Length: 537
Image (cartoon, rainbow, N blue to C red; front, side, top):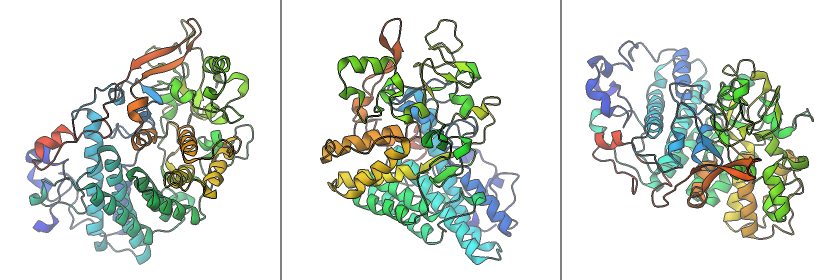
């Protein structure tokens, strides 16, 4: 094989191991795989290779054992909305200040994202060699690969800050790449998504609905610009998603279940709200999040911080009520069923009956007793994506995981308008009301929320309750620079009826001079002399 078709592992992944590889590794992806001369011939080859690039997308819960760290709902355990205590993963190390450049997930996500970037680059360099009767479909495949490559760069950028841009499979003399600038990374991701969007359809058939589309590209740009603080471009990208007229907030036909709750169940799995999702990404959701009495592991337990954030049905936060009412709602979050319906859809509460079990975390001897191994650590359980249909075989679910949905794009659009001081734009209240109304909440009280500061507070609360446990909270509290506040407090759970006080799980620690990004993995620093560590790691 000619030198220009040498196959290398991606930057920063291959380097530590390259010396140990066999010579065969230079001409094929692994010692038993076919070579380029025999591959890239047929459309089925392209479809197979493209499927391999999609394989790196995040799941909601553990289910992809080759990529354990990439579970977005477990990522909630790194934030103020949950506590993680599984017998796998290391999310619990972050909020207590014990994560290092050698933490497994730090290395795993970094390594694997570059692996899938490499796969996408290899696809784009070779796809033209294959025969595909429909030239437009062939081009679409390439645009999907390009959009996926942009996603993996975006994921790295959100977690680690500026990282090396890899837009081709690397030759041996390119091993030691430097970090690109923040501006270069943002521009590269945005340009890749623009190029991809131009060749992608707005819609697919249901069988192909998971594929990258125009709307996916614009939604990823929305996420990129929002977290980069470029609110004008964020609003522009979000408006592109809206103006496609492809997506809408899901409304259930089953009033007994409710619009919001149904969205995360089998009855609502096929919907027009999903923009970017992983097929069967919640295969083990019931097993990983469900109560121990229902054969679950309760690995990620909601905190009082998120439970106490939900408003009452009258649109009041519990902190806006009198001291007596605050105490009542803290002790009994579902008091008189007078809370935002998204609470009941997202969190299982003490005393609630779910499937056929009454959940009694404060009863001694209960299989769901608080603090036991594989039981809730806070007295609460994540309910989102727990469909009773999966109770019999909790490790064999088939729910998809929505990485980005339309409600998030609407809230990102609104946040951008508010942050640009365009808070009087009618779209702010319009889209907030759409999200709130779908959930069963009253419209925004414009007599109270009538300034940039007050609307900022409302938008941030809406994001917290609407997107609870979906993997966005970490990036939100980083963007708002509130992590140094909410992660420097004790993590608390439900009120223990025996003491009348909230259970304290752990003291948390956040270093504002360091923790707003993850560290570059030590293995990469040791292998790449041009790599620089993030400050204070």
